[in-house]
Length: 427
Ligand code: LMR
Image (tube, rainbow, N blue to C red):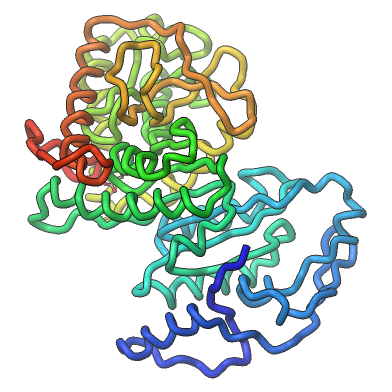
């Protein structure tokens, strides 16, 4: 892997916090890793002794206890453990990641027979917090978590990754134009796309969470021409989960009864929660919820604006439910989709069967065989109401795309957003 990440030394002298000099020093550590003291660490998993057989000094790309090699003999005893999966997470010191990383490490996402390596990308500013995250992962003694590394350079952190969960992005500040937000975050995702293209596994699956996630995903894939465009996703699973919850509430059922929910379009207030195709207990929603006005107005708006309402309550964006929806989104790709059902993901539109404009990232209904790949669902119902709303979200994404032409290699940007449409959190 060859990352030059910070080697955390439990015995190392503490670095003073808070000053620019201290920050520079800690990044310097990152660039030229200190090696931890030699130590023999013994771990035990399911009764099988896992003894460190390699000296920590031989592992440069690791954090703390993860510099001790997990003894392969332990794997021999279980036989069922799979080849290590490398997962990069950006924005790793943030709130969403703080929920997500522990789910990943617990085996909840990739399975109890799947060892993982976590490669955490932060910024110079968040580097101390990133060390704190890695220390908490150490202290959690997860048997499936075999490696943790931290860094601020995507070209190092993304080396050989099989999954890239791109969470880190700048929030829209007070008075900031949406065009400026698109540009600032777009630069981040252009750089990360280039880095993935250069050093990640060529079949890496990329899930963009940082907003505006559809257009960020488009920028990322355009900057990664060696990676199939189909491998890029923008997270709309949170919106799907929100829609399922609202339908269950209205129908007076538990949410496991709600299926076939599609979110079409952009992760913004133009997104289209589809009640035409959704089902409750196997019946079309319209046959169960007769209140069409509620479906067209209240249901739709509640889902579109749920993120903003949460921000008003919490004073910050949703974090735990976003992490849960990332888990759901990944699990939907690594486990077969239940017969007759589907899930929503923001994916590249080229070749879509619905007539949605090509060459954007748009949330659509998908099915997976569980191999990490997906197919679009073609047998969906469409009516004028649904189509009209889909076109509105499409228009928004086409306008966003023009704003970032300078980042996708398509000439000069021309930003003329018809109205100042919002992320769900920006009401
Ligand atoms: C959400 O849907 O909760 C977030 O995307 C809101 C936001 O703008 O952070």
